[in-house]
Image (cartoon, rainbow, N blue to C red; front, side, top):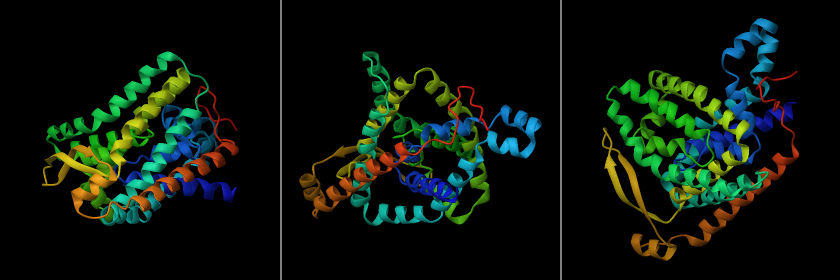
Length: 322
């Protein structure tokens, strides 16, 4: 049991580190490690049914209903990562962006194959959710600056939390990148680093709202159209890959309320073109090696995940059985 909890904790650490990096989704890590559907089913359990579980069986039944054996070590891992491992990821993002982008590009690209292989069937009309996922991944970042038009700073942080956590539940859609395009990434990360409880509280409230609503939508989609939903997620993942392409040039941006740069458009280059642009090495060999390492990590994690049984019931009602 201790070994299983440690494994879940480490998956949480991976999710937290990924969520801290703009362009990478914790949902991608959840998927390739085999806990994605259990995660959204568990989050969905936080609702009126939890009160009923408490009334029927007290703490023990509530604990089982909320699948806290799974959720608690996962959340501890995410939290530990955000205040430790995520700092390393953020330092790498500033000091060695090509290397970090290369690693995550390989990781996310390989996760697209994992999602594709997880489908049980394929139909021609599945092209529609695939294209929808591609289009949403491309257009969502451009829509995010409109959140700032809400005016009220507290409301902006709450809405940003709801959007970011919803994106983090989706493989391929980076909640951190959406925060970046809202101009709020620095604000939230500074609040986490400095333990600013006011900002963290507002952001957390938004996260709770987003989780309550979006997890139910995802569970509903998986119950009714599992493979079509997988195609939608595949579109999200493929659509997110350009954001992680290491050799790119920022060609469109706007300034946020505090003067921070909000990226809007990039030009994607070949390594040789990028080297000419910056007048320095494109580090092609090292970046390519890290791409391969990221892809191999996904293959290894997914292989291990497929051998391990899920601890959560797949009962359509969402009730956890003891």
